[in-house]
Image 1 (cartoon, rainbow, N blue to C red):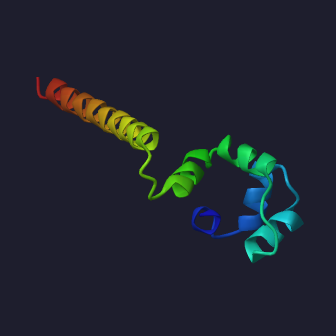
Image 2 (image 1 turned 180 degrees about the vertical axis):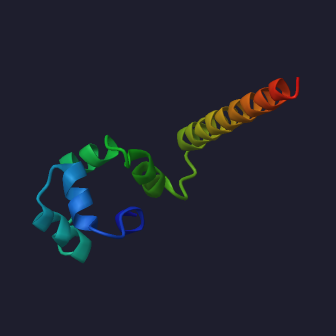
Length: 96
């Protein structure tokens, strides 16, 4: 996930979001060590938190995740709908 989000300077980006040294992150990326709970919590609380959560929960059939994911999708669609509605109203206002 990290390499997909930050193909350039992956270790530096992870280090900045987790509060862990760049060298420690490089060891994670090499598969020699794994991140600790504190680092994962910091990453979940960062701007990449939702992507991490989605990656962790991918394929999960748990009810709470399905309901949460559905709610997020509905909220995203409602925002798009509001944006489109505003755009239509602006266009209608220009034609008058």
